Length: 322
Image (tube, rainbow, N blue to C red; front, side, top):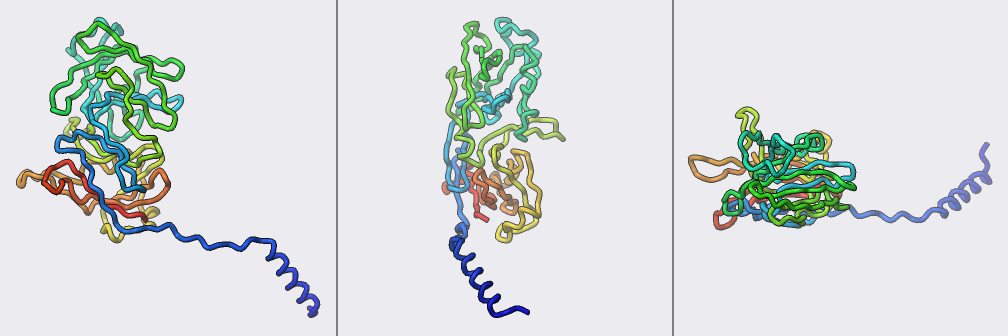
């Protein structure tokens, strides 16, 4: 039989126990806001490479596409070399390891980085085991003029990249040591300046880059320069939704669709050139969700590729925090 005394003691104990804990304050939900838009200026000649952050809905950095030629991974222990496919940079191995003997491009087998962003899909994936001279096709300048060819030898010293290089016809070789940058994905180098260039923001400061890049069309067996979006391979992931309207996409869809590890899932084909009308048509029914470097989820799609005066090269995205 439970006595009144037991009930009183139980209530007293509960009151004493509850007094040992701080009162919890309710946490306000993170504001989701309204649908936002932003137009980015690649330019009609696609001269810019634009780094974009979803949380700020802002461009955090813009560089000219020909301001660098290749990059070196800043990850400790990673020796990957990345070509600037945004400026149509290609690479080939010569048949000799002597820089002075390489003076032309006859018989070279040109290679490019695939756009999926994977280290094993880069043109120079085997450079550490191939001692031959590397020849670079430097693409074109901002006026679409050929920039010429360069040659180089690469080695590593104390987790830095040692670059011996010259233009193809030159015998006056330069050397530069390209180090790794803490907090960044890559270190960038320009043959023209002979120096490291400040290209990419810190790896946690952006989510996507919009630029030209080379896409390989497997059926036609041809690499082609396209314009589109590539996500930051550090801390972001993307999924595609083609069977729902933008307005109906919600946070629960992050569990209903599969995220991709490819850097080019967003890619270029959210638009197409209409030969009859002579302009690009955008497909707003193509939607994506991105998990950003801050861990938030945003839905987004493209709604235009032109500015208010009718110039191409101004992709406009519409986005909303989920």
